[in-house]
Image 1 (cartoon, rainbow over the protein chains, first blue to last red):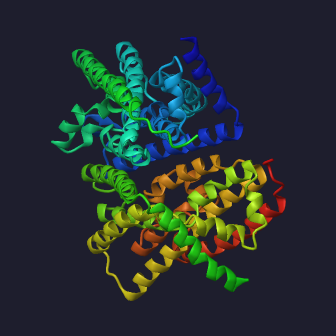
Image 2 (image 1 turned 90 degrees about the vertical axis):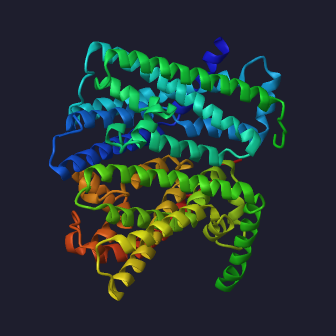
Image 3 (image 1 turned 180 degrees about the vertical axis):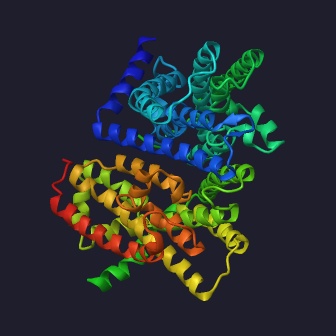
Length: 266
Length: 267
């Protein structure tokens, strides 16, 4: 286990090495969050309403801050890119010789990067924008605690989805399109920019049942108190079931992929 | 010297295109994935507009025209610069940029044309199809003048995109690392899918001056459609037209300055 902890720590430190990049990333994240808030302020101003679909502008601003800063700390393209690179260079073959699990290494690596982005992007961005816009607190203590659980689930689920998409590269021999396809699905069906309560039916109904909803929409809806206590537990269970399904998929694909490695690089 | 360059450039482009088209299935799968990705961004804006009708006073067809203009100008400009200049950092770090300096050829021209990115075909296909629909759907009386302005503004926006990316890439010749500046570039670039007037004053000012990406999207399209443009007002149209050529001159000066400062980092 200490080996995986070392991978996570190494991933964290390697990204901290370049201070200019830390500042550039904080600046980039702040711009994105300010822009998302501006989009919602303009949308609400356009219809002259302060409450739409039972959601106030202040709640929508909080949703945008959470979606932009908190949920944006996981980078699927990094995970898929890592698998694609290992495949292209031939490094992937070395993992078969080590007494370590490649999927677990990827997870440890992403945990380190997540910790880096949490400290250098999420916390500064949330602190600054919350001061600026007055971010709402969680709807209740229960919702706040459950938001943390949903956030951890969101991170795990996004990692598993990315690893699953990345492993498909063993068959396609390119990870580029997989990264873009996952990005497209997340853009539309995670609720990142537009939450499902503004979606037209039946698109909203479909989106609520897809696993991407647990990445942004459900954690934010829990934070804002949009789900009853029973619904929170139900959706936590459903999210865990999705995570178990993706975990089984990743392990199965890795086993299948290991048997068809063709080393072309290195 | 110029004739020598003009003879060699098509050969560089042909070689690169052939290498990229070696795996045609993978190439077109990648393009389809990019169309899906930008299509989903466009669909998300569509869902927002379906519920809220307008955004900053812009209707759905007007935003579709803005989105397609932004995407087309970016893809044409970036095809001539992005991947090539992003790789410059690595060439500097490894010292392989030195080999370009001893060639009897402009390093910038060699970099750009030997890596001309035909991978932007997906962007162009989506943007042109969407633009055709938006041009016909928008509530606007087209004329020869307005169509000419539209095309000239698109060329200017393309030049501006290429100039900004060139400047970021060239900074690697001084700092060794410059790719983190692209994250700032793309952070602002994503905002240019939306009208300039919805953003706070500070972001509006940056988007018109230091990172002038609004001049590649909502400024020219807003000027064409007669929308109020913050900061620039009635000057929006002329500024959008001259911005591209002016920033190309600034980029040339920056490239020459960075080349003068280059000392090499590889061993």
